[in-house]
Length: 166
Ligand SMILES: Cc1cc2nc3c(=O)[nH]c(=O)nc-3n(C[C@H](O)[C@H](O)[C@H](O)COP(=O)(O)O)c2cc1C
Image 1 (spheres, rainbow, N blue to C red):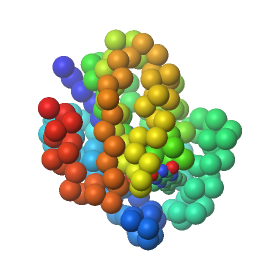
Image 2 (image 1 turned 30 degrees about the vertical axis):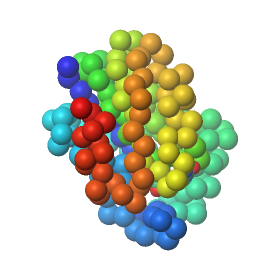
Image 3 (image 1 turned 180 degrees about the vertical axis):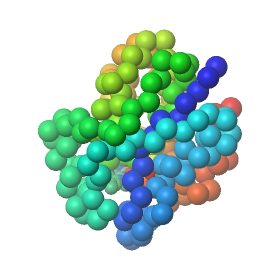
Image 4 (image 1 turned 135 degrees about the vertical axis):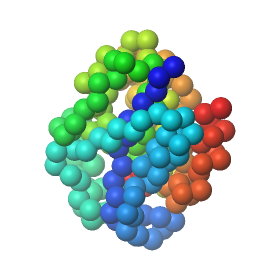
């Protein structure tokens, strides 16, 4: 079974346990690296053409506007998942679901017969409604039970991820 890890992650200012810190590597990227170490799957990072603000409050406003508008922001580079059986799909929980640029990716692919394993980092609301939104969007895919990782604990999440994978 060949697998690819497709993820979006935003470094810069973020809330970690109630205070704003500047992350060099985003929490979701940290989790994606662990999945790659464990499975050997290659990583593919989604980068929006127009980057989200590094400022936390600005970014929450941008994200809320995109959510309300059901925006599909352009992504610089889209992978082709046709040669893979399994897609590990990673993202931060933004306003209870995936960032809209993740749906840009999802809607650019053909999902029939694929297995999708969603993983998300968050600051308290777990997967939110992202799993059901992914199920709706990845038509024809088998969407497995996702893994919610508390963002502040991403750096020590390898055992949790190992358990989820095996
Ligand atoms: C725009 C925005 C919206 C967010 N909304 C939520 C939310 O609804 N629930 C939650 O638990 N965390 C929320 N967070 C916190 C992030 O999910 C959390 O910090 C995550 O680990 C960030 O991952 P990243 O570093 O890979 O981008 C939000 C963060 C941002 C920037």
